[in-house]
Image: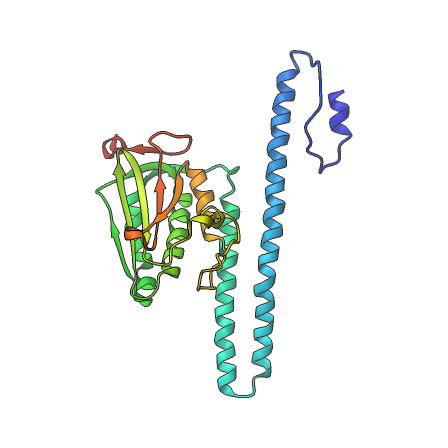
Length: 279
């Protein structure tokens, strides 16, 4: 009966196996098969949705690039041609950024096996600070990092790096010239916490859940170079790490603070002391 039902299905059918009064020796196998089909069905639905969203989002910048090429071809003066070339360069950069983030999102598939290692968060933040200092300086943003001696967690380094970088990208993008961005880590009550604090426009309370959705862009944001993927990547990376991400008001009620908290013990991440690391 079960074999007949499975054989009669087409490759796209992942509905649950309906079987009653199973022999005791077969029941565990059928339960495992039901669970596998359920996970495959969820993964395929997520993949189809991802492909549909990505296709939609790529269509607009591709059209814009085509138009910019047309403007270069029809430019009547050297100045018009130079301005069109600069617009084209910016369009290519935005396209590259979007493709990179789409690939990052695909690599962070929660069904994939992660590479767990011991990570010194303080050292990682200092490295990231070095990478972003030039970008912040170019925007006249005061960018600093505050760390303790060592804050160690066990987890996937690629996921944690993607989590921090995508939040920091947003912080620097939306903080105006003369503003402040701060990276901070501490071991609060033996629970590692990272704070990324900026003096930008903040995020209204009523859309703080929405901003973690793929390709969501807030209407109030004055910067139109974002892809709408940064916080979606951050959320998925946090899930892989067993961490949580909370959006809070910045100091004094202005700007934004993104709080990343790691559990002392969890499915994926565990805080460790420096002594434990050296054992």
